[in-house]
Image 1 (cartoon, helix red, strand yellow):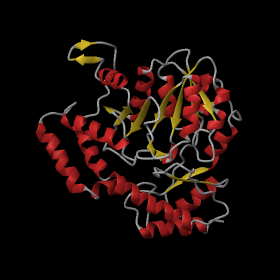
Image 2 (spheres, rainbow, N blue to C red):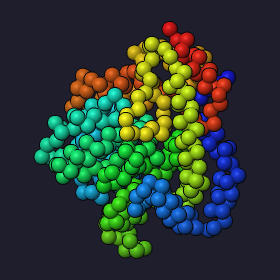
Image 3 (spheres, rainbow, N blue to C red):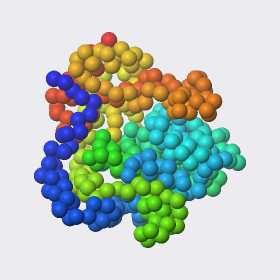
Image 4 (tube, rainbow, N blue to C red):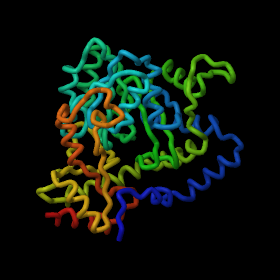
Length: 364
């Protein structure tokens, strides 16, 4: 039996009739861009998050860079961000000409709030909080620091749809929350899609204008914008999955509780959950100093794994110009060498879970 690290087709078959009905409905509507499906999804997702506004966009990366553009953050400005994030988070900063200032992660793989303040300079304009792997970050001290220094806060919620800190949804603490609906996400589309949420009506309006060529009224352009519109098909299909998101999250929770209870190998460090935070388990990430050996061992048993992420942004070729070197962020770099995501998807069978658990427990 081949166990893939993630099976996207299962998420379709679980609600196949609803997805197909919605797809035909959209096709027959004759309206495919910025119509009723987008408006419906924006309202429903804003309500789900507990935000006043949602603006659908073409991707999660677009959500990030447009957020910083709308906030007026650019050349000469600095944005604090954790070092162990996916490179798209950093691209959201640098596409606008701003400079990322990296902070080491904590034991929960999110930004270490105790190390933020020492990185603040006169050029610091914002903190980008990444709720990595699906666990909410430690938002109380982060917001206290942001308020103290009058910094903007952007949340990268690409992996944290529905995760909460102290009962409040990720994406609603700062100025803007940025979401990806890439197919592998807990709330996944069937192609690229993204959105921002905000409680600021002015920011939402500016984002709506910017996503549509900078046009508030057709052919009348207020700013030089972008073409980043969530399309009707993806919006419609996301509305279907959103209706089932809580039950999908509950299923992943049960799978991961089983992993946490049954995985028992001294070579393996299991993920931790912060008090006050919830984890929606976009990934189940273990750590081991023998990561490459474990990957090969599991591959021989037809168990697939993924590394999220093998190269920290500060060591990537794309950001060589920042002048960072190996050893500058030892915790970030240690995580990059030791993290491993094991199989996890909605529809994963008990048998598959048992096979993964047995294989990992027998690894020596």
